[in-house]
Length: 159
Length: 475
Image 1 (cartoon, rainbow over the protein chains, first blue to last red):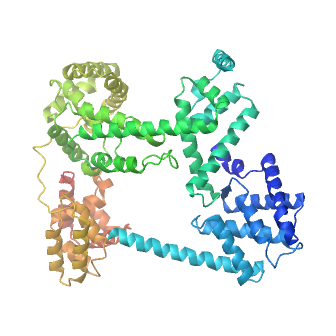
Image 2 (cartoon, chains in turn red, orange; image 1 turned 90 degrees about the vertical axis):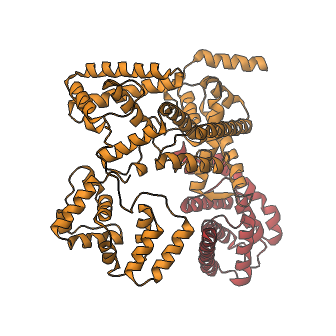
Image 3 (tube, rainbow over the protein chains, first blue to last red; image 1 turned 120 degrees about the horizontal axis):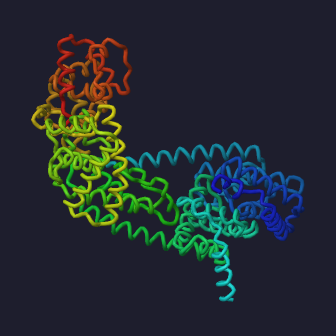
């Protein structure tokens, strides 16, 4: 049973995926006021991308709350319209899980999504490509800071 | 409703299809569900429901683990949390009166409640293990065996203190080194430690029939016979004590003795070499019975342990007798032959970390090599501290050669014995040959030591080799 854990956890469990599609569709109630909605096909696509991203990054997420929060926070962006909504949500999902790995869960989900939203909106002017580079730099700086802190803590412990 | 449930449970009992040999103590629930599915006690939809409930529990556990900050974790973290969760479910299922009852409860019970009860059961095991540990520690043997003392004084208390029932219940203690005769490594988590301590207690209780001095002497004799530093070796004391106690009875002594003299060894060797396998087994049987009677051993767990070990001992003895190698199991008292080591490189008490660091700092700034050697010789008493010093970048360039030149032959013999332990043990040590070869070494000091040996003349090399061979296991 352990062996099949990745499959079991992120899985392509059809019932679960259907449930996730329903949850994401409900976000239309909020995003509609910003002129953004997704179809059931779009929602299915977002769930599929999420499952692939999780698999590729070796992560497990037993809910769809993070993706939902990404959609809720990004639908207010002035750089997103109905033409790029789906693309950007999928890209942000990937960046989100990339950062979760790089920061080893040290930053809470909501803070990380807020950070991505801030960078996307106020620093990258809605450019996903630019955002990717910034996120990579952020991850590197974070890692270095953590390493330094570890070394200092170990030094303190030895003293 | 209650009647319906009772009827269903009775039905399960009546079917009685579960093959208990297919159930694993480790991963009990998973093997139980597989077996219940195979025997059609549970169908696919129920198994799926139980799996889904477990996933929901895992979801909650991930949130607890991340303090509610993250709904996702890395796969290995999720796997570890899942194992921890299943450990609690296993604890619950193992507590049921039968596998059938466990299947019934998994089928009809609320998984969350089952998990809670499993966590409670694990906490109970932990409390029992802590109580057992205190008892075992109080009765520990006063012996100079590092793995025995470190396991009991450090590894187990660290495990018990840091054991996490919720997030890492399946974790065992990684630093338990002391080997037991019977150690079920397939068990996980606190149950493994509990089982380990139970067997540790039996082995220790058996050994307590002998004086600590006698056991320590036996260990020294064993170290000398095997040409090894017994203090740092992973030796099982029960095995050593049991073997020599039984063998000494077979050599004609009264039960309760551990030492075997050289003349007794020769008589016993002769006697066993002439006996058939069956004859040897009979001799062992009688000696073991004598020992049990002499010590009035009545505890059924200990008797069971002894009777479980006895056939292993018999088979080994038969094999060694047939191959004329009884000297590897009969440990003779070689006190008369053992010379007392006069070297400063004893395996003595190690100095404190602070003192060690101060010494390293001092050595780094001293230029004169004679002063350095004098500081080392007065500062440390343990061979292991000396090895740490040699690995602490305190010596530069030719200083290693000067350091070795400043050591006595007996001290060089200790280093040679350490470096060529394998050859020394199997009697094939040849320093002259080693010095002529281009051997590679693991540490810098070892490379310099090999260089140093190369430059020595044959007489000196022979003397070091002789002393290394005579050295009695770093007593």
